[in-house]
Length: 540
Ligand code: SPV
Ligand code: MG
Image (tube, rainbow, N blue to C red; front, top):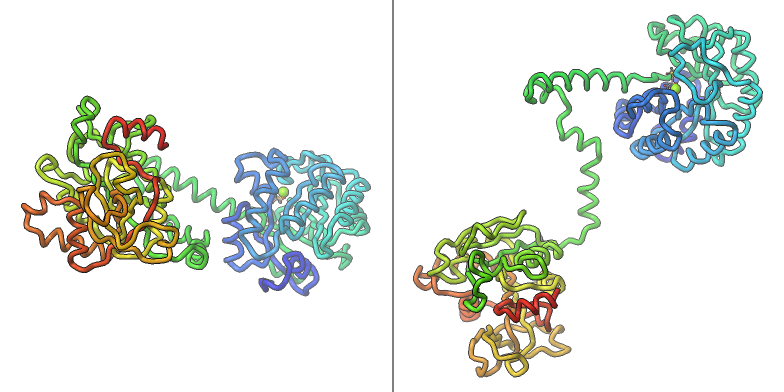
């Protein structure tokens, strides 16, 4: 039955065709359907009672048919075995019922059972004898319309006879069953609310083998299943027992936790989370992620050096907060930096604070402090974040805003040390202090084809060989991070306290390690002056 090559409709039809007795287990959502299948059931009963109860409404068509459809679609998606939906009365006349068939076929439901009562129906076990039945001719027309609407010849329509429930007697039950058979039903569900199986056994005897018979022994549960098998019934439906067992357990658990105000008495009685994840198919997603997500190494961390106060020119703006917290366009500079990193999927962010550190308070970043910010420099701040200098890292300053594409390009470039260099040279740039980069070749249309190396970082714009300006962005591979950690550790403290990141880069170059250059033109802003702040607004 579980053979994936067999269509669900065919699997359900096989239950009606095959010799012997088959079983359908009730389910009312994706999880319970999966549990029923895992237990071994070859098919599922989409119970109207259980689905409505799980939705917190009565079994009186209070849930609309499209709401039921949504539930049954989750059930069908979660399972490989066929589902026979309890379609109540078909939710209206023949027209509603045939549309129901079409929609169920589209959603992978293998069959539907409709009962000969009136819309809106009531559960058969609530005032059963008081319930009006459908006029059997009208109901037979409904069955015919449903059979003619189905596209898949194996889709199953079960006609449910309620005459015994409603107290109309055996003869009427048999008459109705025969009319529905003639209308094209694939099986008859003969329902009974008696505490013993006498009614359904008598019906079977009179009925013979005209059509397969389906029964629901909710009330006559003490009858041995062997008796149903011997009598020649085709399908037994265990109609509501997963919903009822869940209900009992949920009531007990809720009561326990409410009274205890802790979880210790229930933890071992409830399913472990691992079981929940297993049923949800978590491991398949893990495999799929391996198969479909881009490979590549681990995403880099971002380390933002933001301990300094900022230039004197900023005056009042940095009276009680560092430059990194000055708003540009209504958001602190650091906020723009964090957003740019996150946009490039760099989510693990470490910010080194110093001056007015309590004012540096953005959420969801890790803070480390360089409390000696006044007497130390950049490398001391980087040393404060040493524990995070592991694996691939991006290092930048708390006053430099980047566009996402600059970060993305850095992340895509391989190398133990990679720096972002703006190709603007001193001749083109307004006079200002900058970290001028001397690279192995200037930026051109073809540099992208070659690996350009950093040779030096200088501060005198008149120095020879300047090909651009270091933007303040450095990427380290895992090996690069390790080398930087070792350099920090190996430096005499006095030297480390004075050193800047350019000092570190010069040291790296001198030691013969390659520092790779990624050229850009714009796409970043170093906020040093009030004028830069105004530009920052434009930059956004
Ligand atoms: C259901 O499970 O919703 C049924 C069976 O229709 S019964 O509750 O026995 O009527
Ligand atoms: Mg029902």
